[in-house]
Length: 132
Image 1 (cartoon, rainbow, N blue to C red):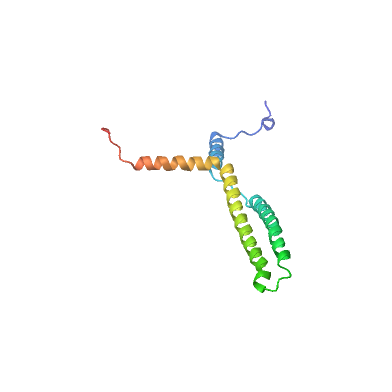
Image 2 (cartoon, rainbow, N blue to C red):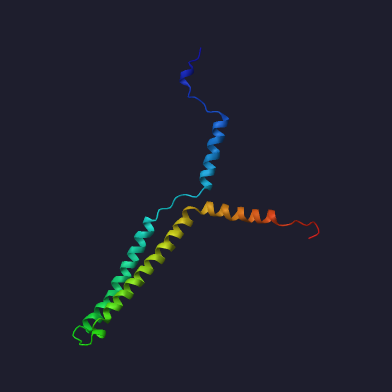
């Protein structure tokens, strides 16, 4: 008589079909993409822009340091605020672009499916004519 406990338990066809279905559904579904890599890259870009701009602002500050006119003396502060604004906008734009690229890269399969499903839905709503 054969000892049944030596053989591994087999899964049925239904269990394998369910596993296959969920594997394919997981491949089609969008996957989570974190914002931290995009944030780090964009903050580094903003810091580089700020440091390069600070050279101009500091030069303006040193040039107008002994001036008696307060409008000319504090003009570097306006430059500093403009530099902060520009570096914040650069950070925001770089973060959006890097995040979108990483999202499209990781979820390319999902976006391909949604594109073709939208084409299929549009074609199914179009009237068909045999005569053209």
